Amino acid sequence: MWEAISSQNASSGSPKVPPSGDGRDLLLEIRDLRVHFDLGGGTLWDRITGGSPARRVVKAVDGVTLVVRSGETLGLVGESGCGKSTLGRAILRLIEPTGGQIIFRGRDLARLSREEMRRERRHLQMIFQDPYASLNPRLTVRDIIAEPLETFGLTRGLETEERVRDLMRKVGLSPRFIKRYPHEFSGGQRQRIGIARALALNPKLIVADEPISALDVSIQAQIMNLLKRLQREFDLTYLFISHDLRAVRYVSDRIAVMYLGKIVELAEARAIYEEPLMPYTKALISAVPVPDPTIELTRRRIVLEGDVPSPLDPPSGCRFRTRCPYAIAQCAEVVPPLVEIKPRHFAACIRISPDEPQIERVAAGEAPGLKRAS
Ligand SMILES: Nc1ncnc2c1ncn2[C@@H]1O[C@H](COP(=O)(O)OP(=O)(O)OP(=O)(O)O)[C@@H](O)[C@H]1O
Image 1 (spheres, rainbow, N blue to C red):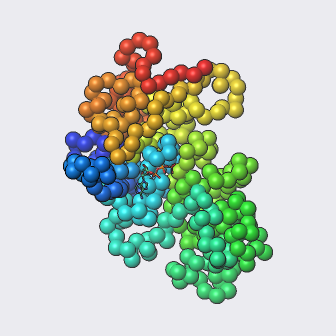
Image 2 (cartoon, rainbow, N blue to C red):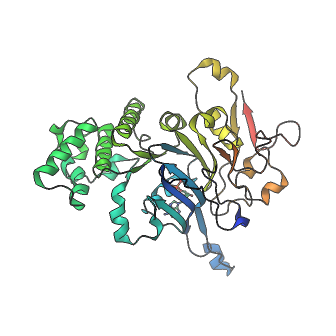
Image 3 (tube, helix red, strand yellow):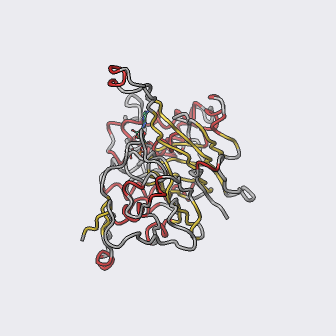
């Protein structure tokens, strides 16, 4: 029954992992993945005063266990700095994980040598936020898209040329522009070039990291529709990272909500938006403008107070507790595991259980940390 469960229960040792069943529909299993950035010794002040220079470590991803099924789009949302990009990049080993497993098509990517990983990367591609920064400005579109084909020796000569033209057509670019350079294209067109390049090797999984946030609103829908069409055509699986909750809802089958390096809620997209369990998710969702005015009338905006705590010194126990209106003393002591509260709906909160999915307030009245706006 477990589809995903986080290893956030520190006392439980190695994480429980979802059974793979017959394994056919699981493309990627991430188990207890950790990415910690060691910033070195203590502060300058420590050094001046001779204080004990404790190592400063950013726990950008801190015990994430997650499953991605073949053919689905898993959305990953959360406030800036919660670790979304680090998680996405660690899956491709563009950032080296500190610990945990990344099981892709039955192999643990975290254990592969550089050469083995290079070969495996053919099946895992990334689409970046800023298509201009991610495309080499000195290369023509032809060379940008052809590069992975040539690196892997998949096509040669005229065959490469034909494949590049075909990929350009697939992403809605005219092959007439094959000799042009990135700066000669608009932002949306550049993102199409990046998508064509990502598609060139027929990957199984694409990590799309904020693929629309650098684009004009009018272009965003086009790119999302393109990604959806390509998903059907190429049988793609997406990890779609975005802080734009409307976009994530539009493209995702399931959504994982991240907070300070941990997954705090995971469910089908509809359930995340219509029946969120975690106070954090409720606050995120309530900030999304709803086009239907009748819904707006019945929905109250929940404004979270305070900033996300520093990942250098996250709160003990539940990391959200310092902003949570429902927090009790135990929340400071127990790291809540991600538990299946309703079928296929997981939440990491000691105050939520399958028997009592809605949290009751401890005391009447508004609790600190959460402010309701009219
Ligand atoms: N190379 C690095 N060295 C040190 N800290 C890093 C490094 N990369 C990321 N971080 C830190 O890790 C945390 C997670 O960053 P990350 O970029 O993954 O978050 P994010 O959710 O993708 O945010 P955003 O939406 O703003 O991109 C942040 O505190 C960030 O400052």
